[in-house]
Length: 206
Image (cartoon, rainbow, N blue to C red; front, top):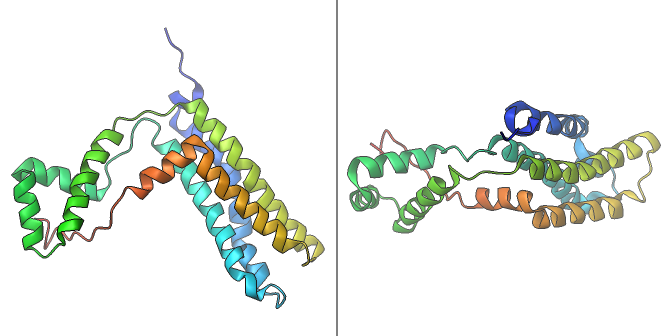
């Protein structure tokens, strides 16, 4: 008999690993974030975009970890995938496509929806290794802690000079991690596959 790891048998255990990291992120966010530091300093005013990008990347990192935990045993259909799959089942692919184009949806959008419905079907059954998710969480945790420390070091010491290069370097390291860590990169890739859509079932979907 194969004994499942706690991360696999208990859905909440994975999110419990993310929780303390998210608490550190929230502590910084509630205090104004790195952007808040930059916004208060005339010396850093021209670099606010670097602060915004760092805060954003930290948020994205946490969102990605939560996504991995919640989709270990497959990616649930979102509204678009549910809508398209149901309509294709009811009326067929080509009639659905003609209907949506007739209702004013651009042909390219509709084709993207159909392509995405196939991706969603495949991802619905994809499985992730809980131990590899844990590795991604641990790797991301290094950057969350660096972010938290950067903010608190500044808040406690109120030193401006070193914060810009440290913030820029941290942001670059996070971007590199999200690009090279297998599961983090997978999560970002899956998210990027969701096309633009504006279906209103009361008008164009029913």
